[in-house]
Image 1 (cartoon, helix red, strand yellow):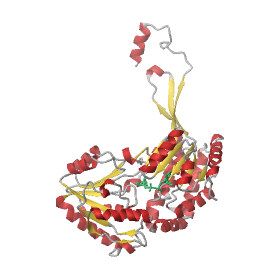
Image 2: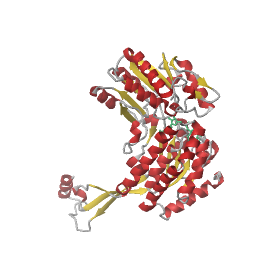
Image 3: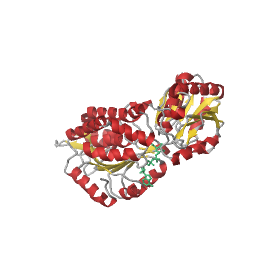
Image 4: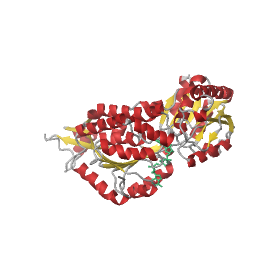
Length: 460
Ligand code: NAD
């Protein structure tokens, strides 16, 4: 049964009590919770796939690839590394502090709030919950109401598998979330757009609660002069069409030199034929747009360019063909807003330098991609583009590496998680120093003398 807003204060108090009495402290408890989450996913793969089919017409393979496999890998990694991450981390004590030992002791924060977005509604709720539990916290989880079937399923499954004294699910939209955000949490991890990100941060400021904001942005994809176009086209269009482009790190637009533009578009057309056939609106391997509001927004962008591939849509079923647009003005709406759908503007540039300047003139993206054969271009790109993540010669695949921290920079977000970065995000890294009881040279105590000062300076 859904938790009503009037019960939010007592729900948080109950979780805080669990935390205070040490329920979440033992590593064995944490490992067991992660194991239970893994079991939850395995035993309910079918109902998860059904909920995602209802919300997004997500193809079965994409359910595994974009949601479950990432979670399994994060859980496995966290369970294996937990002992290492949680143990005290010894640091060097300089001469002036000797004799002593100093270390960093990770400790859980308390009760954290996790708010997910609708596009990967299982993964975006659970992948922050993995490090939150691994680090020994209690958590309130708020799935996105926009993916309604998946939100309901999460609310049903989580209490069946995870310890309800430590994890609670709250379902709801703006009204419920507004109430929830009035509660005091020890950390909030929010995934979604920047508009709500600001609302979350404002609410968090009331309690001085630290936030992690996992936002979006326009992730560029640059095709360097000598790039292998067949491979680039295959990989980039796969990343664009996965979940019908409703992926925070999907390549948003492509920058390619004039000389290679038509060749790239032809290669993309070939790949689309191979992946989805001719009637792409009917392909079972291709998701739908989440709702009418987003469908209308995306169809509105079609006027911002010339359709080179695709362009058809099915209003009744909220489907839009993978669409390549050319002749797009750099100041048009489609180039000012995050697309978050299967439309791909291909923009011509003269050189890699011009492409880099184009990206740098805009907000820092969540991801940036470069297809190249040149080490020099690679270095230039890595050194000059500030972005949450960066991938050379592919898109999205960096998500499969649990030890790579994930998160944005600037307008694409703040704070990172996944792997150890996630564990640290949900921990306080407490600084501890243990001084020896042996007597010391009393140079820091008054009466101060020139000799003591000289000695202090020498010891640094
Ligand atoms: P959304 O509408 O599902 O909202 C996200 C969360 O905010 C939900 O839990 C929702 O209930 C809550 N919310 C909505 N309106 C609110 C309000 N007025 N007050 C309080 N809470 C409110 O998601 P969205 O914003 O449409 O998500 C799309 C965006 O998320 C895109 O920009 C995308 O790039 C980004 N995104 C980022 C990541 C990432 O990991 N960085 C992942 C997925 C999506």
